[in-house]
Length: 508
Ligand code: ATP
Ligand code: MG
Image 1 (cartoon, rainbow, N blue to C red):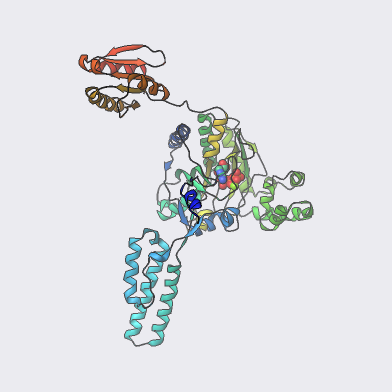
Image 2: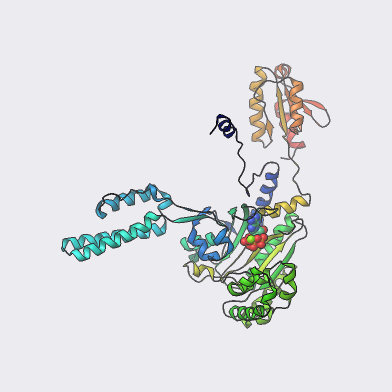
């Protein structure tokens, strides 16, 4: 590298990675408000918060979301848990010497201390003990077989597990439900979680690679339509309290494992008849996942898709009854909905009610919430058969829509700026700042002395409501001057009367 190039490299400015962004004040005040109100609303419906890890075993997502989906096959951030921190078995090792060293390394390395690895370690111990017994018996064949078994398991450990940044929260919530035996709690268990998700998608308005979801799940219990309806009522209540505009709720039922396969076959047969007129994506999906064809946004496919059979006409009696029940329960709760027969979920574990909520000001990325019932997922993840339903709100889009509608929180300036001069005044100022903050006011205390003129200018720039003026005169007389910056009015207060005045005139 030339010297010039090296200098340039040194001065290189770092930028946030494509598809990620910084959320800054005052915008973060809106994020906090949204999350606080979500917590209030969800708590009023009996939900508790769950905080989850941001990465999980890749297999968890492959199994739940589906290995063939775009999310899992192309969009996940996946890396290997490096096995280099484990003691190397090369060049020489004996299972007897190596096993305790490995166990110690697992304990020192939380990343390796997974249930899967603990299971493998137990296997290693089994093979070791078989090996030792074979040696005692001088059974060369058995000991060599045990050795081979040992090495095979060891290899899977040394390869390390693949882990991925989570692209959604449902899989982790179900994993946690199973891991913590939550089926033993009173059912259903109602959980919500808020946090970042990661998908390597093409960034555009309302679509990021790190985005945030507000997620709620109802796990266990029955498939009573009231559960789905209450969940939908809850998210609609949240949107109403936030003042979200142009909210539209679409619902559908996609049947269950009894009736859906028949409909899917019928749909596939009908789609095959018009295959030549469809684009390459839809053509492929006819074979892989015909329901997804209904999702198509391509202009020239709309008319053809419009003529396809509706799933509502092919539900089994139980599913049809359940769907009627959900609609009745929504009406009971005054929740307005639109039936959209093309609203589907492409994954097998989904069943019955699905819904999507759109809002204003978001262009083509206008879905702020997607949800539905997924009675089959828990079993797929090795848990007991468990009914479940939930939703995920795209928080970035929710915030974007609120901002487009002009719902920015007023940038809140400081309540009080302390303009002090002189050492004695400083001592008082430090104490006053502490007391005012303890009373809930936002206070700015300049760390170095400023001329009063400059201090007042600074107070103005920070949007402070009051300047508290503390100079030698004020300290000597015990009467402090408070200036209201908007009007220029000044008044004198003793320390206790100042606090009374602020509390009366400034709701904290
Ligand atoms: P879309 O059809 O918009 O891609 P999706 O079906 O992939 O959404 P879900 O997996 O159901 O979305 O996630 C629920 C919500 O999360 C979406 O309705 C959306 O608001 C939000 N969301 C999904 N992907 C992104 C992303 N890349 N950036 C921002 N928000 C997202
Ligand atoms: Mg998507």
